[in-house]
Each structure stands twice: as structure tokens, then as C-alpha cells.
Length: 252
Image (tube, rainbow, N blue to C red; front, side, top):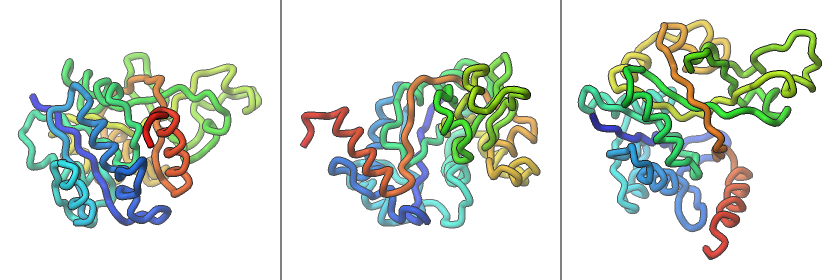
């Protein structure tokens, strides 16, 4: 059983066009992601999936395997699925976002482990929320998890709702989890979920994982203590440069 890390990357972005090629410490963001994926002990092969020749050319220059995909995919998951369709049955596929230059190899290994050890179709990560700003930020996706580690629901709202407790005190009375958008799939499960019609909850919250839950696919959630940083805007890139310099003080 082979585990393949697929990094979907597109050039078009409303807030940050050309984001995968933006430079961080002298290397494009997509290169940072690719190199960290290769550091994961569970990954047998890594592929950059893109519809843009500029990204493909840059990736080939730093030695990455590249798969050219269709341009009209609505999500990175769909782009991954196009590549996965050409992989052997029984493969494990990890969807790694191409805008997270600090993705931890340990997090990738953590997502892969339950798929190797059992017969789960999908796995992902969550991190405990410790700041009220994140709890009530609709751009931060929350998840509630059952006793066996299965996702019960994902939402842009703060869940669970604590009745009778002032919102500013919620973090003192319950555990809230932020979803980390790193997914592991069994290859056949990935091909199945992208073929599903959009469900009512996905349409309401604009979260594709709700389509999978509504259709009955269990999603195993593992907790992580490591933070991630997605690059969505040029301002995020400036923050990333500061973080990189702090982590690598001897790098020019």
C-alpha cells in the first residue's frame, strides 16, 4: 500500500494571485510545502497538481513530480481526485494545501496512521481553540467529535453552543476544536466523495466535508497541538517571513 501526498496548487486567487510562486526566504511557497511533505516518513511519493504551466515549470525546477489537471475544479479535493484516479487501487492519498509552508511532517504522519492501521475512509486533524477571536471567526472552521474520534459536524459557527453561559466565558466551560484542513483518504473513497451531489449542509456552510458526512462517510479526527499558517494574502506572507526568520536565525 503506497501513500501519495498530493499538493493542489492554482495560480488564480482573488486575494493573492500567483500565491504558490510567491517567494519566502528565496524559495516559492509551493517548494516549502513540497519539501516538508517529503520529510514525512509515511509519504512514498509527492505530486504537485496544477492547471498552470507557470507553477508546473517552477515545481519541475526544484525537482518535484508534477501532474497537470483540468482548470475547472471547484476545490483542491477535486484536483487531487483527478490525480488519484490514475493511482493504483488501495493507495492512500493525502491532500496537502499548497499554501501552508510550515506544514508539519508529523501532522501528515498522524493523518496517515489510522488509514494504514484500519479501514477508515477519511481522516483529518483538529486543534484546541484557545482564543475567543478564533472561536467566533467564521473563517475558522470548528468541529465536534464523538467518543470514537468520528466527526459529528463541522461549522463556521462556534459549536457546541453553551446555553445560559455568556459567550465570553465559553472557552472556560467547554473544549472547542478548530479544524485543520489536512485530509487523508483511501483512494477509492476520495473518488466516491467528489462524485457526490452537494448536500444541504454543504450549501449552507460552504464546507465540502459536510457533503461527505451527510452521505454517511465517517471522518476520523485526530487532535494536534501544532499550529498551521495558511498564506491567503500578501500580509500573511509578511507574517510567514517573520516566523521563518525566527525559526532560522542564521539564514540570510
